[in-house]
Amino acid sequence: MKAVVEAWLEQAINQLKSQGVIPDAFAAKANVTHTKEKAHGDFATNAALMLAKPAGKPPREVAQLIVDLLGERAEIDKMEIAGPGFINFFLSQAAATQIINQVIEQKGQFGHSNVGEGKSVQVEFVSANPTGPLHIGHGRGAVVGDCLSRLLDATGWQVSKEFYYNDAGQQINNLANSVQARCKGFGPDSDDWQDDWYQGDYIQDVANDYLAKKTVDAADKHVTAKGDADDLQAIREFAVAYLRREQDLDLKAFEVDFDVYFLESSLYENGDIEKTVDALVKAGHTYEKEGALWLKTTDYGDDKDRVMRKTDGGYTYFLPDVAYHVTKWNRGFGRVVNEFGADHHSTVDRVRAGLQALDIGIPKGWPEVVLHQMVTVMRGDKEVKLGKRQGGYLTLRDIIDEVGKDATRYFLAARRSNSQMTFDLELAASQTNENPVYYIQYAHARICSAFRKAAELGKPFDQALGLKHLDKLTLEEETGLMDKMSQFPDLVKVAAANLEPHVIAHYLRELAAELHGYYQIGQNDESARWIVADAEMSQARLTLIDAVRQVFVNGLELLGVSAPESM
Image 1 (cartoon, one colour):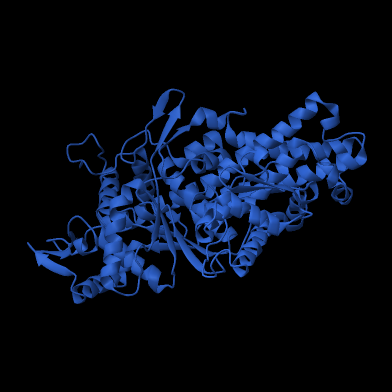
Image 2 (cartoon, helix red, strand yellow):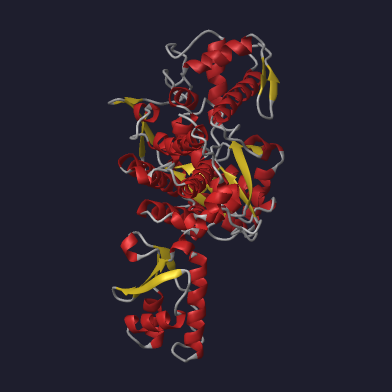
């Protein structure tokens, strides 16, 4: 109905143009929104306020002209001019119930659209260094990135999910040295131990398996250990494969998968980094100073120029990132979304500067970047400390084992990604209405229970009969649920456009509140129960809650959370 109202307004605006009330050249589109309060109707538009200036008339006068042009409509009970010139639309009961038919007809596709028109988009996320298991910060990136991929897919984009393995550089050297030290029998307490080596107990596990000549099967890497404690390169290859496998298992437990695993080491092997350096030098955006090669990032808004190649010949961290993004562009991804931790903030501008300096057609602001803030994990009133290099390491898998995949995913998706969050393990594990994921899943399970109860009472769900009698759904709670369902498609578009999956999490909690409220009135008033003596009323109500059930399924799917039928 929102689209219908928008079409009516467009027609009315065209009529005002033909009447000379507003200029033909005026091209703005009227905005139609769902109202927040039922007293203001189902939809509202600011069209009159937008048209007042070009029409040279007061907004309320323009609003009256629009209302007159729209006239009486079967789908509208009344139109009301409010405030400075807003027009509120109150749907007829028949029009309000159309959403039930739409949900039932579209099923799992309800809420989906073709905004992306099948265009390609790459979403890179997690991209953790293979130096340790994934922690809750990686988990937040995994959830946000995976949910973004689901939202973009639901809005018509062809999505490719990519994990970038930083399997080169100093951190990998530190990893190899840490494992070698353990292989040789000394650890963090030894005088020979370096401060930047990894100290977690998992390093000893890697060393033990290396010495035992075990084989590791990671997503796309298979390595058998040599067992030679003096072969640092062999240790490096085994350790990277070992920890990649651990990350694979973490992600599998989280139900996150990828289409492409890209290795940083391949950029060196294929000469992509040298090609990028040569291209930047050729473009005239570099200079040498004190034995180092610098990029003129100040030409692109940076506060100072940045070193690309150090005096020892090694590359700084952002140069491989530039080369990596060139491969994305060359692979045909006109749109790229990167989901990173907030500590990558300064890197983003430098990489974009490097891409602009190459002058190969990459637009400004490419790639798009979503940054997530850190997560503080609490158990009761005590913080659970996390850190790759320290002992007592709490992995993402540990958290999933403690509170479950669904709760972990929901909690990490439910806050705006650029806001810091506290993950309360005790709340996430609780089975109370204070736990939002439990509250939502219980709403879905409650609906499924109602269908089982109807069958037990000899009144099994009859959708065909229910659809014939939707006019019986006149309770405020019933119309409220219909209105809430009608908001879902627009919210999916908004969440995808703004790259904000938390919008869906909030919506589902509000829908659950509406559903539980609808159930509760039946506990106080038998005539308002879902299953009553009147068969037509019962089937109409069961049809309504079946549509609500489908919206729960669709919304939870966008978050990667299950919809249990019993709890």
